[in-house]
Amino acid sequence: MNHYTSEQLANIHHETFAFIEIREEEHVFTITLDRESKKNAIHPIMVNELAFALQYARDNKDIWVVVFQSKGNVFCAGADLKAFMGDLGEYESSIPVPEGEILIGELFNKVYKPIIARVEGDVYAGGFFFLSGSTYVVALDHIKLGLPEVKRGLYPFQVMASLLQVMPRRKVVDWCIRGYNLPVGKAHEYGLVTHVTTVSDIDKIVDGLISDLKANSPSAIRLGLESLDYITPSAEAHQYLSDMLKKTIMTQDAQEGIMAFRMKRTPVWTGE
Image 1 (cartoon, rainbow, N blue to C red):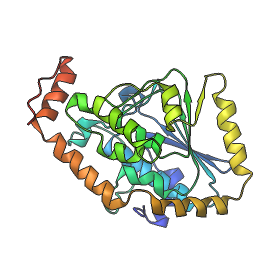
Image 2 (cartoon, rainbow, N blue to C red):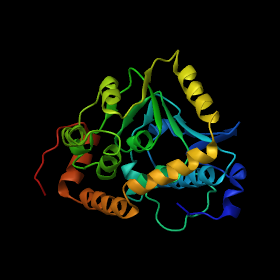
Image 3 (tube, rainbow, N blue to C red):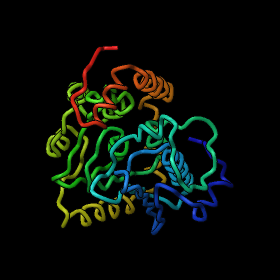
């Protein structure tokens, strides 16, 4: 995850972020998804900003815990397909151009710090990178968790690989190929969510986790999580899955599924 130089990272608090906000306080680095008008959908520039922030968190020994949160009632709606197909729209980001391609499925494995996902809104599709890549997932009991890709003629390739690290294989495959909303209670049972809570209690749970983590050796935790990276999917696997997604987007079914979704009609599949 060495996409930026140490000189570039040192300037992080003077950079302009288009799609996220960052805060560093008392050994805790908080990253807030800040694209509420688009349901915090993942934009290519957001991926760049996330990579920049996470590499900074990894390399800064004063950061012991990373927290993800978001604005609005949707934590993340997945990938902004329009943007990933080349229509980036208007944005203002001063984050440097990365060295090499960023694979979002690899980002979270390379932080080597405990990550807490504070999930107070619905999560769909690529939004599960944040959940499967986190050490702890604290979720409100009423949110929706959905993988609708197959209903759009697509498939959650990299998300599937990430989910397989925390959930039973058959449960992941069933979810991917049927595309339903998974109840939070089931997500907790299957291991995707670590804590189910309410609006009134979420602060207490997140703060309690942070307190427990800060009471232990940050060096031991960092080295332990770095060793864990050796038994997670390789960069080569994520590259293959990323290429498969690009191939799927170009199918006739994908074009039909995306169009049907936009027109709010039932898609007509051809298998092409």
